[in-house]
Image (tube, rainbow, N blue to C red; front, side, top):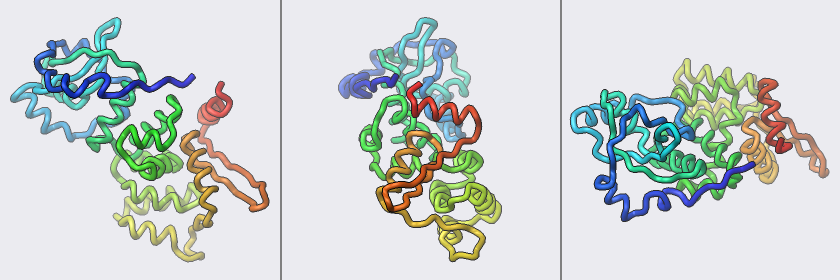
Length: 278
């Protein structure tokens, strides 16, 4: 059953309250606070090193926001400050306690990271997919939540149709989102992986990758046949829903076929549950 999103950040931290957070904050031991389980970041980058130095010298100047749990607290907002405090060797942190639903936890973590550009392209796409899968949001609704264009959300979700090896390279920063979008022009997953490896090995630019993908026949790579805009939209919607590559082959006579890729029995069972609601 899908969960409902809450009213968002303004319901938890109204504008006038945010200006008074420092006065309202209490000190909570770091050992009593668990990270946000809905945090979309899977990797902790080194970009908090400067913040860690600042925290070590001056402490945490802006309190984090937590919600109370039976065995302590759960982080709602302020993951970078929380992690910097841990790295700096602090034992406690200023925090404000608020009520927050699971939907609000996910929404706030996503918005905080997207607006601060803290997510790599794959984690951002996975976060969008989670909003769609767990809360039934359309691409337009997701875009409104995070302050993005619908096309930006759609393009991000398309990256989830790439092979896992390519997705991991994008998440690790070895390939850019532009490189990944270029690879989507190729219809054969093996060729996507091979070109991704070549991009990394030879340091190819996005334009060079696009030129290879769009090259003339005989280069050893198949170009994706131009499809009707409505067929492409259906493919994108299916890929967003299932989180895997989907190909729709339309005969132009009202019939056709849909090919859904899966990578393991567990992956197949996951998609069956999504389709059947079981």
